[in-house]
Length: 141
Image 1 (tube, rainbow, N blue to C red):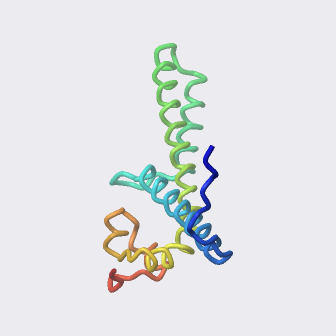
Image 2: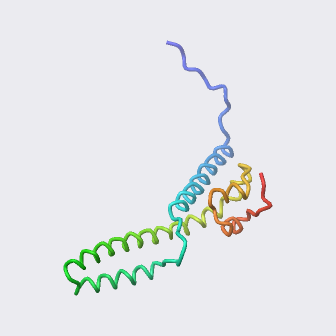
Image 3: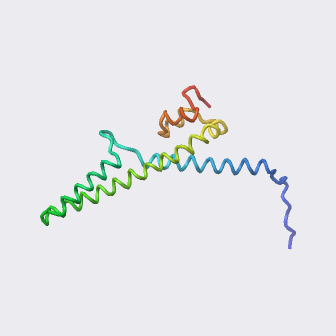
């Protein structure tokens, strides 16, 4: 058998290992925010809030108590749609928590990776979020 070869590379320093770990952590934070941002895109029109959906849901459930059999079927479907909308709105609050983490790391990440304002805007990151992070239109690669 041939003896195992020793690596010709020097072992990584603690600082290098810490920088790699920081990069992985920041990448995960940014990826999580962008994924949530993409999945929570709203539609045009009147803003729907958690409170308004809960209010509609309560009204539907109240009407279902006295509704005819056929009306109950329609109300059941409406209730199902409202519950789905409620879950969607509640998951949008995840974007808010991920947004704070994103704001804390994106500027340093952008500088290291040479990413400018336009790249983040193309990824649908809101301008106000970039402003909070200190990334402005003048920020270029």
